[in-house]
Amino acid sequence: MNVVAKVLVDSFRLLKKEPKLFLPKLLIAFLYGLGMLFTAALFKELLPALNPYSSSISPSLLNAILLQSVLLLAFLFLVMILDVLFNASYSAMLEDFFKKRSPSILNAFKTALSKFFVIVPAAILSLLVFLLLSLPFVFLASLALLENNFNLFFLTAFIVLALNLLVTIAFYSLYPVSIFERRNFFGVLKSSAFISKRKFSEVFQLSLFSLFISAFGILFAFLAQRIEFLLLFVAFRLLTAILATYQIVLNPVFYLEVVKGK
Image (cartoon, rainbow, N blue to C red; front, side):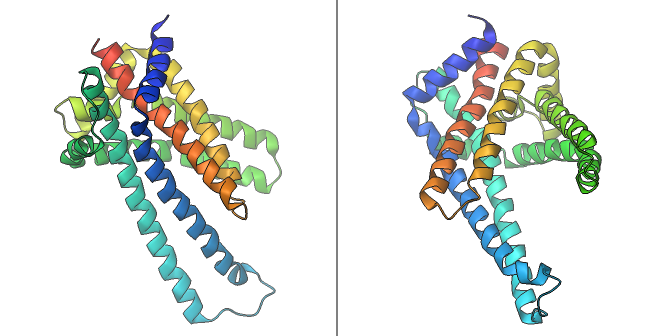
């Protein structure tokens, strides 16, 4: 069995043996699900204001919608921070597993929280790198759609996906490095990039697999917009959480097995 296949299989077996590892991502999926429901409700309130043929909307209603929008954005930002900390927590939990100890979600979260000012800035900076690289192409893709230029749209969409893969490869080991190595957030990004360069073939394959899983997660999120089917919505959120858990477990398993050789 080659290295990548071993990481994939071991990650699956680990989750099968320790199903409680799904709990953090289930919580995150639930919180993001609430955000999606609130966004849909807010958009429904906003529709009359967007309709040029409707009567004017009252200033008080607009102020209320603006306040709700700010609160929603704040909520989603806090969920994103919590998600980042949980992602890092998996590295601590898997270290327990590799040392034949029962993984503790609470202790792992405390470990991640103790490195808040390393993990969160590193994660946000990696996201900003992707946004800065991709925004021109996203803008170009939007223009292509407006002009019904589908060839240009698919080309720019492919470039954005390629940039996503590139950033994922560069910072693939971000969370385990944040937990296991004593570095500031710039050092974490540098070390992660160095590992990716040294183990490029393995990281490329795992990043491609993670991108594939993310695509399914986005598909489930898109289908879940049909929230009139509440049970279906919940089912899609559960599936998204399962895929996200498997995806994030791959990182520390790769780091501990391949990079550190445990």
